[in-house]
Length: 182
Image (cartoon, rainbow, N blue to C red; front, side, top):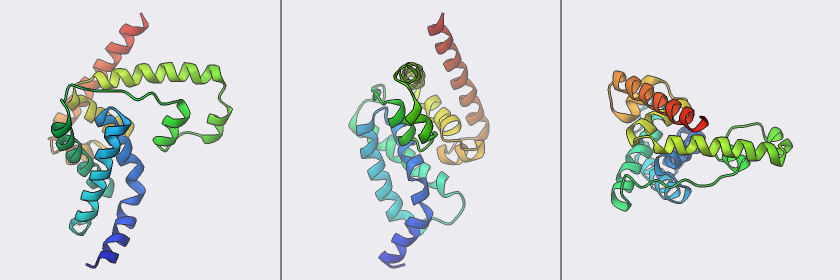
């Protein structure tokens, strides 16, 4: 395949999943700066490997690359226990994650944005406090919306382990958020 063919295939296969890939990198890294480095490296790896993509779920393929890149980048550049949380506004968070009603964001009052930001910050902190393996599974399922089998494919773990980690992650989040509200 020529370089031009690779570029066209990359655009066709990968481009529609780039927002999800960046959001996943951000959740794994814990901050935007590190996520940008991970995302850039993952995109390079995906481009170099586009010729080996044999079909199936392009999203799962790309998220697998992001995951592997994040693991190697985090291992090389910082301790796994370190997690920083960016302070995004409601508007920035919705735009970065590619969701949300843009008109509703424009109608948000300062009060509603402050309440949403406080709730989002509490939830984001609770997610960031999860052990890495639980956080990864939770983000892939409940934020990225992958099916259990896709998560098993991305993380190279048995389906039962995916379900167990997700249940444990959700239970810990409920306990953490429930304790904060008391």
